[in-house]
Image (cartoon, rainbow, N blue to C red; front, top):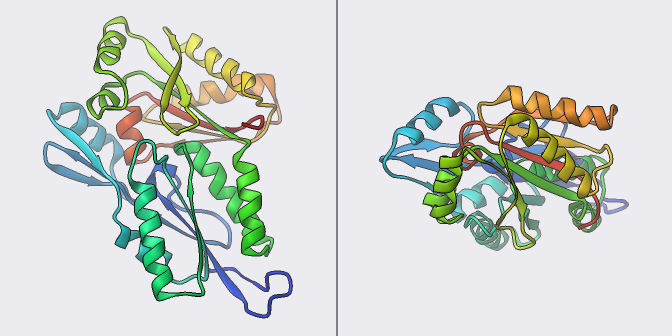
Amino acid sequence: MLVTSNCKGDQNYMKYKIVSDSTSNLQTLPGSIEYKTVPLKILADGKEFVDEIGLDVEKMVEAVEAASKTSTSCPNAEEYRAAYEGADNVFAITITSGLSGSYNAAEQGAEMFREEHPDAKIRVIDSLSTGGEMHLLIEKLRDLMEQGLPFEEINEKIDEYHQHTRLLFSLESVQNLAKNGRVPMAVAKIANFLNIRFIGKPTPEGTIRPVYNVRGAKKNISKIVEEMLAQGYTGGKVWISHCLNPEAAENLKNAILEKYSGADIGIEPMTGLCSYYAERGGMIIGFEGAHK
């Protein structure tokens, strides 16, 4: 269902829609706003896994772990153009342009859509992030749209909110990041040899920066909470995404609740692309923090 609004006095009722690539880990969106995901793809020794509803993530992870060669591919412009159909006002949000071509494809798709629908308004947002932070932004867009706000006001408010959303990741392995040039291979080999977990965050440009190297599950959880507090977390919304590791996600949730008992914390399994990069046991945490 699409929500329509008179946009605070505008006589032309406008239809709203949110489009995301599949790295948000959010495949369906509760509420009255239409939501569409555009899948990325994972290749493992030539076998393709499409990151969409129905993907067996554990099977995909096992195939990647056993493969000699793996890679990923982002959606193309035509896939995005098709996803924009059916609405007058569209907000699209993608994984950071620092790690993927998804943002550029979404922009190209928006240009194609505008040529066909010159009155349409489309904003493509580079999340400079992934996972839970994208989830927070999508939910905020939905809430703003359900208020019936005009496109321009939503545009301003989502940018303001984006200044308060943050991301951390906790990885038990960085082999796939290293194989795809996201971190140095030497770092991956040392981490594997020493059984080190990485806690990191995005840079302002949307690339990956390690913050801590830790050993042990308990220390990993405590360091994540410590870093969240250092980044201004005060009990707001949190989304914890995990790759086949619900126990760690629950432990992190409980550790956050010990600090802020009323915190709004959601846990979700990662879908395909995030599972590929975070690898088995990894977590991605999106949360509301201080102004960036």
